[in-house]
Length: 459
Image (cartoon, rainbow, N blue to C red; front, top):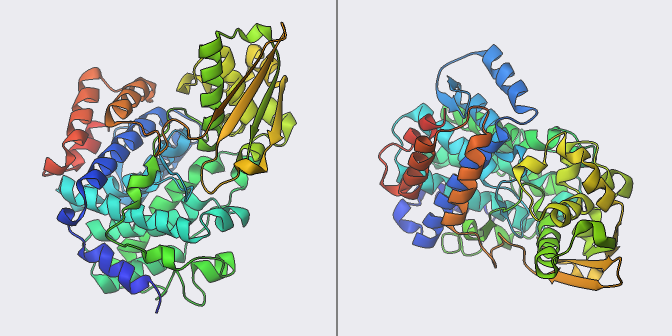
């Protein structure tokens, strides 16, 4: 007996009332965080090019493209919006499964809701909670997230196709048979290589949008009676056998299904870069504040952590002198130097001009990174920084759980500040009036008769 039938029954039959109140709050925070990073990402490289493509394609005016003020077919709108959400690498992430959730689930939910017309806030919350939970469980079952990454996949994209199909199928009120087909058709498209990071390529920010587009397309095909693989997770040619050689834990797919909601294990980011660097950023900021460190007085810096921290410092020549914004977002030396030089890490620090600043590059070349295998753990790892000063002083700070983690969570109010930070960075800056209206509407999302009112405000 495999998990597919139990999961599909859960996707189709769960009611809003079945979702605990803390999970509802977590979803609303995820929605606001995703819309914030979409606004911030709307002006970033790759997004305008996608907008030009979907404009050229044309089609039905179904769903709003955030910040650009036009509508297009729902799959295409979700592709662009999902890419925007992920473009800054400022979006949420599951702390153990190492998958981003909102870039796929939220972009899918709003695109399909607007296509369907007058979908309530309760139903949108339910769909995002279910799709996010499934995406995280798919990642957790892959030992947990490790075998997918070790095999070269970008887990957010790989599992996102299936999560998107679940969100779309739920909002479209697919029955169990059609939901199975939607998941099977989504699996037929699954992909997402992790090489975009190593190459500093814009492909990294494209994957979640492709997943959202593919998941919606799969649900639309299933709605019309097109059939898909019957067991896309555990079948002989399913996800875990074909993509991971059978290296997975099937119990994690359904353990406490409907009782434990993985959306509660999603962290929000205080910094617009890879979450695996955040413990080191926290350590650097704490050292600078506590010891009133002037960057010019630093002699040398040692950053240390487990495998994931160490990997984000390799190869040193690229990580100390980023070629692209993607390189900088995934560079431990660069973000630590930035924190020590400026005492902050913000969206303004990740531009083509900012990553070439000589005062930051001067510091990156004072950094060595040390592997501490004792700090290895599933998910986001600890990080530490030691600074030696020109006058002989030495300071060390180690961070077990970074700000924004489940152990040190950001609040809804923290995310409202993030929304206000990102709104002016949009390709079409959001007015203060609309900014506050969106925050208010997301805060009472479960009371809205038509959740699409929010996305239309952002158009």
